[in-house]
Amino acid sequence: MSPQPGRPRRSAPGKPYRRPKKDPVRILAFEALRAVDERDAYANLVLPPLLRKARQDSTEAKPFDARDAALATELVYGTLRRQGTYDAIIAECVDRPLREVDPPVLDVLSLGAHQLLGTRIPTHAAVSASVELARVVLGDGRAKFVNAVLRKVAANDLDGWLEKVAPPYDEDPEEHLAVVHSHPRWIVSALWDALGGGSAGVEDLLEADNERPEVTLVARPGRSTTEELIAAVGEGSALPGRWSPYAVRLAEGGEPGALDAVREARAGVQDEGSQLVALALANAPLTGPDERWLDGCAGPGGKAALLGALAAERGAALLASEKQPHRAGLVERALAGNPGPYQVIAADGTRPPWRPGTFDRALADVPCTGLGALRRRPEARWRRSPEDLAGFAPLQRELLRQALSAVRVGGVVGYATCSPHLAETRAVVDDVLKGRGGPAPAAEWIDARPLMPGVPGLGDGPDVQLWPHLHGTDAMYLALLRRTD
Image (cartoon, rainbow, N blue to C red; front, side, top):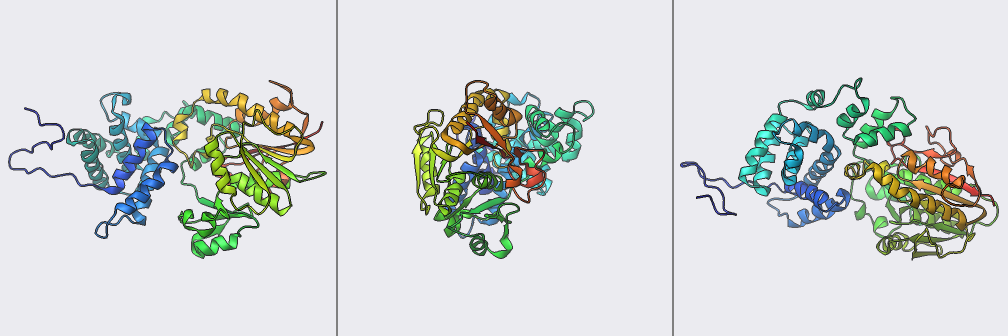
């Protein structure tokens, strides 16, 4: 007679049943991975509330402290970043195709593989902790399977496994890089093309995508200062930005939400590349009035808040438009308290409610694949496909056409994406300027490189592509255009 569901399996005679030990750190990491897998959630949105709940549920006897939070964060992000590599390794250690392994079991195996191959956790502890986790979340039966697989994984270190599962570079360089650096092959190919071909830089870029990015703050001008933020964080825990005069880097990660300036929207969390894009648009040379600015794709509000603060210093007004009402709400919160005039509306940038020629400056920070932010959203690399490019293409071109129509003759438009893929960057601008796909106002290029002073490696221009491995930023792209008719 088999045991009833929900009851622990009876042990052999003379060996009392031992209940599994509940490890809150690994249970939290497992729950985060399940949310990413089941609900297509993003780890950067799922993890913070799970960490808050863990702290609230902890006791004096069993506190959930900063070290626990750091380990849980490393387990989640490390596992997601290296998912492709770990899948290849686990596939060598199971007797069936990975698609036939239940996703919750695969998540436990991936967490175990990361502890074994990507951290300094001792082998015995990594296997033991993973088996205990499996007993809690999967049951004793499947925990035995986890134990058997992870013992096979533990037979080699990461370099040893890569020699087994990755094809030699000379035979298939793209697949070799895809397995070794845990990126889908099509993304490896696209990044290689965006870098200009050849082997220079591509491995550095892929490695940078797998590194934990710094948390960067922006001191919104006229509302806070970098000195205030550094003092609030602590001299030893905060550094000035590399390129943006408004940036502050948190050396130890930290909790930005605990800072008064962030809670009051006088400062915010914003990658330095994003700051540079807004600053370049704001500082682009302009003849004539400089009174009306537009952010046509403003959600979730980081660039809009910086542009709003810069506009206020010059007596200009900002209109921030976002199609999705809930994202327009995020923009409203980011701009709350801005000292100058601004307005936030929910509107479709491809069918804008404003009249043509209304604005002096306009930003079109268009929806894209997000391949430039894989450090922050590592799971995105496994969700995107080449077909997504075709889906975004018409929207990106129409948003740029409408942005050019929105500015007056002599007005400046910034076209930005958080993607280095050529199909989302230069190809979009070239098509619009040449009238492919529909008529657009005539425009000329503005060299964006001088508008990012001190930033090296900006290429031949006139557009700019930032890179994680060269600049320490997300891979933001910017083209600046001046309307000429």
